[in-house]
Length: 137
Image: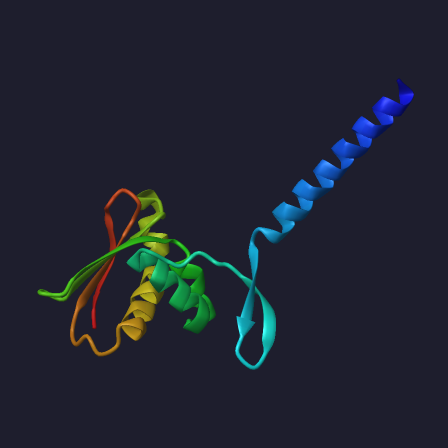
């Protein structure tokens, strides 16, 4: 009886170790890069929305104040025909006046990200749709 429990415990322990090892390696994949051999690469999700792409770009290229402000962007709407951009955030509209400077950082980052689009009007909105700031560039 004792031997059976020992074997069952060993099998359970090996299963747990296998599951843990599998979970630890599930976020990584081995790639073979020509001329460099196998490389362990992180499989990061590819941004699918314009807001996600904007946040990724600012995280890589933006200034520290832009990065801090753009982390709050939840959605972008761009109307190319009339050059209007709507940037929606998770900010509470009850404190809209305290977000005005950070809203300007979002517009500045957007202008840099979309350089070459000509003149446009960008409005930054609170989570409930209230306009916090509108700027032209």
